[in-house]
Length: 303
Image 1: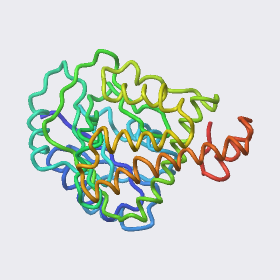
Image 2 (image 1 turned 90 degrees about the horizontal axis):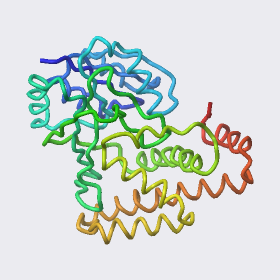
Image 3 (image 1 turned 90 degrees about the vertical axis):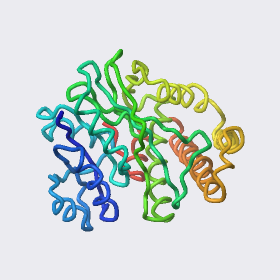
Image 4 (image 1 turned 120 degrees about the horizontal axis):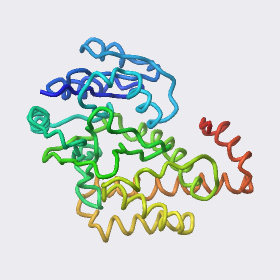
C-alpha cells in the first residue's frame, strides 16, 4: 500500500471538518490541516481526530496549498491529495481509491475524481456541472498547484499518465445561503483579479494548464480567456446563464437547480463583472491605482 498524505485548508469549518477527515481516514496515511486561524472549534476537532494542524495566514487557495505541499512532509509520502473541508469521499470511492493505491502502476502520476456538487441538498446534475473531473491525487514530486487567484488546478508535467476513479468526491456545504453569498462575494473579487490580468499586466500569468493533458480543464480555461472574457461586461453573465440553463439542460435540475444555476451561473458572474466595471472606472486603467483598490477594498495584495 502506497502512503497517501491528505492536505486540507480550513477556516471556521467546525461544521464540516469531522465529516471530511473521517472520509479520508480509511485511505490516508497522514492528514494535515493548514488552518487560517479559525475562531471556532475547527482546530480542536481536527486534533481530536489525530490530524496534524498548523496555522498560517491566508492569501488564497493556491498559495496555501502550495505552501502545504512544500512544508508539511510531502517528501515522506508516495502520494498527495488535496481536499476542501466541505468535501468528502463516498464510501465506494474510499474503497476504490484504497484498492487502486495498493496496486497502482509506477507509470501513473495522477488520479482524477468526479466531483458531485450538492446545493441545498440537491445534486446538480445538469447545466454542464456534472461530471466535473478533477485531478485531486498525484504522485509526490510530480505535481504543483497552479498559481492563480481563482479556479486553480493541480499541474502535472506534460505527458504524465493518469487514471480516473469511477466513484465520487462530494462537495456539500451545510452552512446555508448567507454563508454561500458571502463566500462567493470573496470568490468574485479573486476571479476579478484573474480576469483583469487578461487585460492589464497586474502580475505574471501562470500558463501551465495549457501544457496539461487535461482536456476538460484546458478547454474551460481557453473558453473563459479567449471567448468569455472578450464579451461585453454584464452581457456575458446573462448569455452564460442562458447557455447553461437552457442549452445544457440546467432546467432539469428542478426548483433548487434553478436557484443554483441562477445564483452561481448569473448572479455570481454578474457580480464579478460589476467589480471589474467599478475598478476600471475608478482607476482609469492605471495599474498602480488598481493595486491600491484591490489592497484597500478587497484585501488582495499583489506581489
